[in-house]
Amino acid sequence: MSRTKPGWQRRLIAGTAAGAALLTSAACSAATQPTSGNSAAAGPVRNGGTLVVAQTSDADPGGFLKTSIGNILSEYQVLETLTLIGAKTGQPEGVLAKSWKLAPDAKSIDITLRDDVTFHSGRKLTASDVIFTLKKVRDPATGAANQPLAAQVSSMKANGDHELTLTFSKPTPNIFDLFETMPILNPATYADYAAGKVVDGTGRFAWKSWTPGGKVVLTKYAKYRDAKNTHLDKIEINIINDPTAIVSAIRSGRVQYGVGMPALDARTLSKQSGYALVTSGGSAIPLAFDVTKAPFDNKTVRQAIQYAIDRNRIVQQVEGGQAQATDLPWKTSTAGYDATQAKQYTYQPDKAKKMLAQAGVKGASFDVVTLNTPEATGIFQIVKNNLAAVGLNAKPVILSATEYDERIAKQDIGTPAVLMMNSNALSPASQVVSRPELVASENLLKFQSPEYTKLVQKVTGAATTDAQKKAVHDYNAYFLDQAFALPLITRSTMTVRSQEVGGIASTRTGFLDLGKAWLSK
Image (cartoon, rainbow, N blue to C red; front, side, top):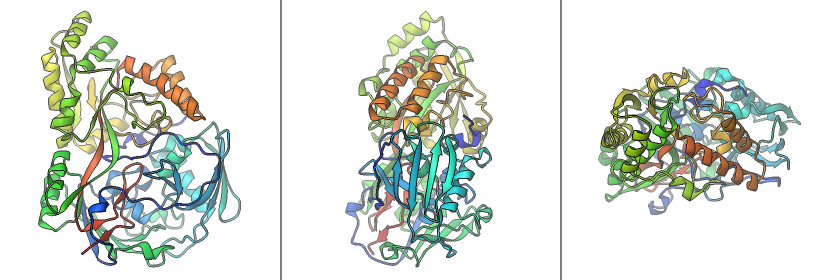
């Protein structure tokens, strides 16, 4: 299967509340995304007003197919996907798709589109727009988030303006993972998206303007098919690079909703009167090792390090208790998730010392790449202290997000170890072909074995729930034993809103949906 390196660069700070791989052979009808977060505490729904929000990363209007973090507050306001996974149901719910039927063998799907959808330019949505978008996602040059999954689409056929059939080269029960991250583009204007002047979508809000490094302005699309449920007149997205400055902006009232602040700051602010915590999405944070570099070419050393790390301390000190200490990268609702497997490596420093002694490793020093964020550096400090207690010296190589992405794209971390961050939003079948540390071929960590390849193939090919459970459970056992990329924690994204903001929802991958948000005053 072909795979694009840029597609690896998905360090989303957000994820999802949905579960595992999806199977359906019955026709499904369109549904509205339920509101998530802490909206119950918001004031009454009121129409009108401008919602002022802030994020730490600049927008990337040319990167909507990449799930670029800079688009976390704009993408699903301006653009729309075929389906989204319902936060409450865990099942695909129609957005642009009116209905669909996945074949019993999961090797094809028939899709019927809504016939009342228009782009902001006024042109009606057709099946050819979906095919254009899918071809872009399938092209490795695009660097789309789910390119490996799109590559399994062997044929695309439009049956009139509002129906199409997709055929897959292998069973693809996780096709809804692809739809989740594939906003439909307008072929006539797509070439202009990257400049940020024309971004022509079908969402509740139209792209008004983008000032690079400054702000994005979105305005209500008055001709939206359900415009009566769009309450805001405008959304203003301010780019504030300093996470602590976002906290100050919310406290001062200049910003009503902030994304990108440290977890402890978010939790502390949310406890104060007038503010509320919004949790969404999810990420796994693994400590990963290049298995070709000593001492991590020794499995016993990799296992010993897992026993040496106090995951619960990371949860409390860095994440403020808002995370899970675990050895597995999946959501707990995933088919095949085993709570016993997830706790295989408990904090046992004495056992770690004995294993290192058995491996003949003492006083080893090594570099560890880590992101230059408060969360990553906080986690690293605990890891460093834990490893020092068992006789190992971990030295940080702190990189900006851009530098980190470049090394990931080149498949060269440059150090024997790396503290990673990846979304765990999608099903295992999608993650094992897209996450750079989990793929079976051209693995970032140089890990490869016939057994691992076989287990990955079973995960991606499982077409029933029972088969998924067994495939994931068997994969977990081998993955835990090899210990080359085990997570330290998984956690949701924490953001903070002022109490006057309601209706904030999130997608499965943790991008924010403000389409039905409102200001109560």
